Amino acid sequence: MNNSTTRILAIAVVLLLLVNIGMLVYILKAKHHIYHPSTNPIEMLEKDLNMTEQQKTGIKKMREDHFAAMRPLFDSAKNAKAAYFGLVKDSTASDSVVNAYGNKILAIQSQIDKMTFAHFRSVRTLLNDEQRKKYDDFIQKMMQRQGRKDSSRKEK
Image (cartoon, rainbow, N blue to C red; front, side, top):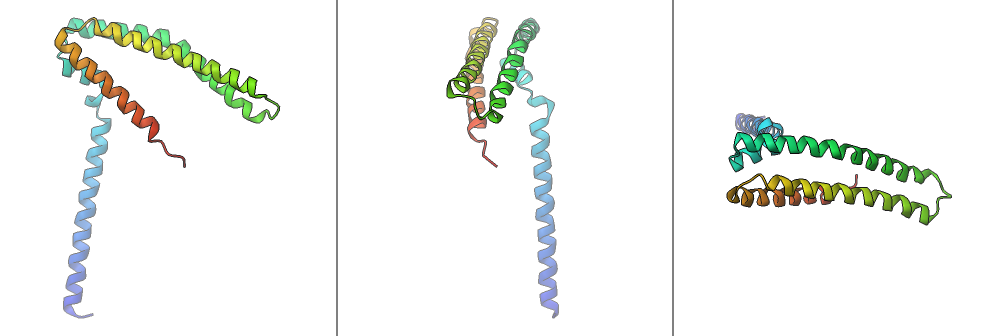
């Protein structure tokens, strides 16, 4: 190889190395940002709404009570789904049995959704008018993001 070809290849290698390092730094920063504790939705909400200590304490208590009430429902949903998908191996399971199991899951999920709705509504009562507007926007964004996450899952 002549001198100019070697020089062009060396420059290309250096440029590719710099681009790879840049991409690596970008990916690591993005990953750090996603999992950084400051992205906790509760902390973000407290900060965005400029909550008082009294509001933070009240909401924390409500949240603990809410999850204590929800835990048995989550367990029921998990068990119902396990039983439902356990029917896969039973080739004699009729459509009515499969539908009954599916309806049980739907009923539990409906109860979970109603209790979550009631919780969000009760949290809202602790807020002032300005905070409520931001809270309402936060809830809508959170639900839209949840919907995108569910619909963006691809089969592998």
